[in-house]
Length: 418
Ligand SMILES: Cc1ncc(COP(=O)(O)O)c(C=O)c1O
Image (cartoon, rainbow, N blue to C red; front, side):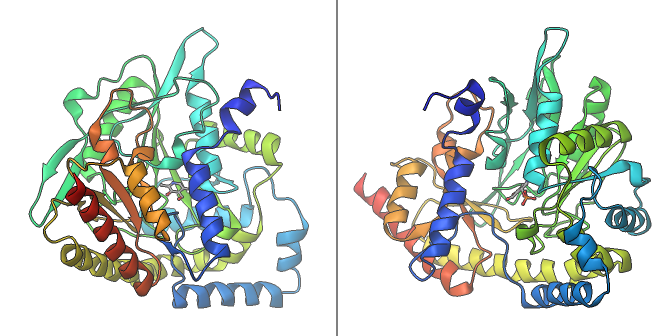
């Protein structure tokens, strides 16, 4: 079918599209597929119970359920939820914000579509600006959201080699070079796909550079503090008027309600609300309604710290132990898992590409995400991108361990055949 350039840009198969298709296939053939791809969080019994209680309370109330599903919220999202969130972020995190600093979106994926297209692309003065990823690999979901071409630019990281087959990426500040063609800087923290957590000092320095350039720093906090707080290292939450912090209800266990949160200066919040009105009238009301009590009481922070974080920390330790067992004898490397629920494996000089490895694993009913999708904005060739694999370890122990064993077999086979 003949479609517009918009269609050609956005309605074609993309990395994130393939990943979401894989999720659908895995869901429909649940027994056969070992799902270590996608970004689904775990079903943590205590969290599920809490959400069920929230829903029961909502239904038991004489009007809250009807209000949540039977009325449009304003374009910036539920006032009740936003007020509760502002009180929480002021009281427990210390951010100096008011309700004018928060807007909701239908999932944070949509927030990135809005924000990136607000700050990158064509400007009225004839210039064209890009989003800068100061440290790649970065989240696959960013790759295809730009409405114009040449939308991203990225910098390769410095690699710190650590004991126990581990390594850590750092921002290479010497090569950052933020020119006039940069409209905003973006980092995910913790980073999807690597589980890296950009350090407090790195974030502070980035923030200073962004402020000096008069451009916003966008921090994707989908896995970060104060919730879901899937962070295993020392790293403080950070916000100021020049920083746009994006949060989400998905990774704590609510991807189905599609609720994203933007904390930003009032001007950005007002723009996001206006785009919401055009694109979807208003963000969905069910997610905010379900969580308002948990946010208002502050229990969401305790749930994250006492239940969600230890749950993933245990799983991380399990999968790391297993990787060390299964990959013995191979030249493998593992990004130090500091947060989120992914391990990022690097096989130096892998004789096949990460896409070929993905396909071999798919044949064996193991779904992962090949590394090369996580390099938005990288224009120069870098063999590293084809030597990495992202593995989601949020699923059941048996699924993860069977999957890791098969990955190790296929990687060994690839090295042995070379
Ligand atoms: C780093 C990161 N940002 C944003 C998102 C989007 O999440 P959602 O649209 O469900 O809020 C994801 C989902 O996997 C993610 O991993």
